[in-house]
Amino acid sequence: MRQTVRKTILLISFLLFPVTIWYFSPYLIIRAASEHIMNGSFIVFCLMFFLSMFMGRTWCGYFCPAGGLQECAIRIKDTSAFKGKRDRIKYVIWILWITAVVVTFILGRNDVRIDPFFMTDHGISVTGINNYVVYYGVIMLLVIPPLIHGKRATCHYICWMAPFMVIGSTVGRWLHLPQLHIEAETDTCLSCGKCNRECPMGLDVRKMVAEGKISGCSECIECGACIDTCPKKVLKYKFVWRR
Image (cartoon, rainbow, N blue to C red; front, top):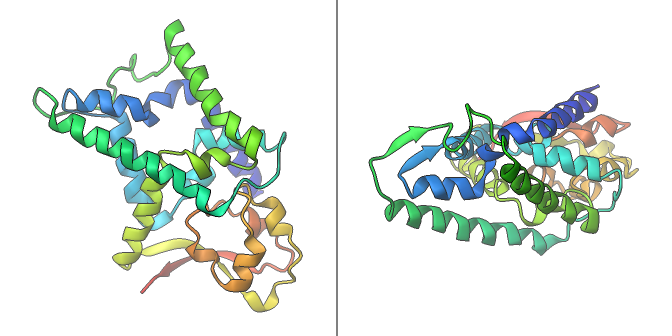
């Protein structure tokens, strides 16, 4: 039941992407920074960072429109895309992008102001023909990696939002805040591998359970697919304080 609800929310989020896409735009935040405007994407990225201090990457597992698109792509290619060090590519992209945002803001003009609906039409992102060209270009950028490399490859390799949540989770641990994690009772694990098959991120959940590392994996999106498929209920959600 939980996975049905989760996937339904992801599907709805993806269907609403023409409305919300500018609120996740890495370009629009730079455009706004040049005019000293804190736009919708700036606010959304700040919220992602703050909420991840308590909830980890739950956004990715339950609400991300790009995640919804990629989980549809799993129906076409369901192999694992997780290749260890390749996931660092997104951090390089993120550092270069954040540097561009900061430099653009420093060199920007006008007084600082907040405009959540910057460059939208009454809060709606895609309203014209030209905008649809950009929209479908973004869709291609998001869907091609998982079609070529496998499960949620875009999340692993090029997502500009994931680092906000990974860093937020790290800050939450430093501050000893209660955080949502997936915990495992390793003694009762059958090593059946069902968790591996169901993980939309293509992670080796069975190995992480055996090594006691599942709650520390930065690529885990807290979707709970492994919890719901485990025949022995080895896995469960838990709020924990890390010391």
